[in-house]
Image (cartoon, rainbow, N blue to C red; front, top):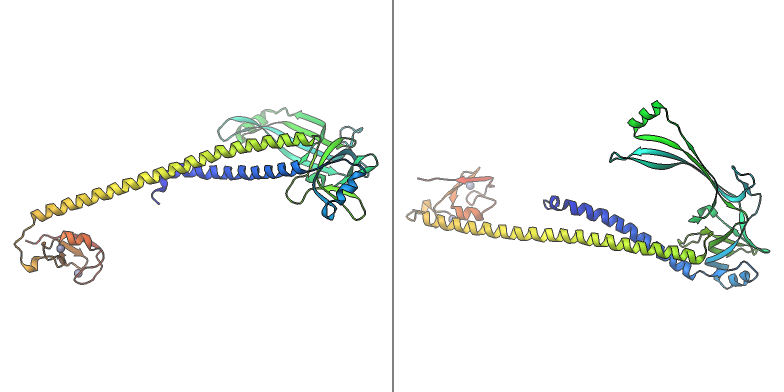
Length: 344
Ligand SMILES: [Zn+2]
Ligand SMILES: [Zn+2]
């Protein structure tokens, strides 16, 4: 455990890096999955051939399909709140608060917070001539291209009290942005999703079941493919960069560990050499004309030199004392400490 403080920096970097790397890899695999799905998705026209085409698939379901058509409401369309001549099928109203907030580093920076968002949706179809396909669960679309009908920014004129309050709270109001976006009826869009035919013969397009997203966009399939390819390439670069950082941090931890182990081995070697040196010096200095009673009970060669505590037995030479760790060889009591004994 005492190794941890030495590598704390590398461990933190490795931990954070692994988290980001994991996130990037998950996004990359998701991106590849969508790209594969989209590449193999057939582009079909809304006409009489569609029914024949869908009959070729099991359960009359095409898992991922690209279809273009005109948006047409099934009931009464939604009328814009800001421009009464505009009608549509999906409406999103957003109120955003623009503030200048003090960051933790002490700088003031512009920030936007969404404080309110409302979505309205009315059933609609994609239409071409006399054929149409109902779009189900349009709000679940990952990409929902809508026209901005109104975008207003109302600046706030702060008074003296607001300035003082802003200084202490770290947040100064700049104003409110109100935005209305709509998928207008009559717009020509690309729908990408799962196409199915009900028993009554009605066609509908909805979010696919195997994790692929529903797209309702003004872009074409090739534009979407280009966008996905470039985000896949960008994610690949990120994965490589964070992978290199993770490898570098791991290598540095391994290097420090090996260096420390080498140092430990050297220290142990040095300790042993010193012990041998001490032993040799003791051997030279020892009195060799001793009675049996004065000799160590273990080696019976060297004089008794160590007192064991708490039992108080003086029975070992220093060399043997180094090798006996637990109990007194005479009374078997636990050795808690030892001290040099001088017998004259
Ligand atoms: Zn001894
Ligand atoms: Zn003892």
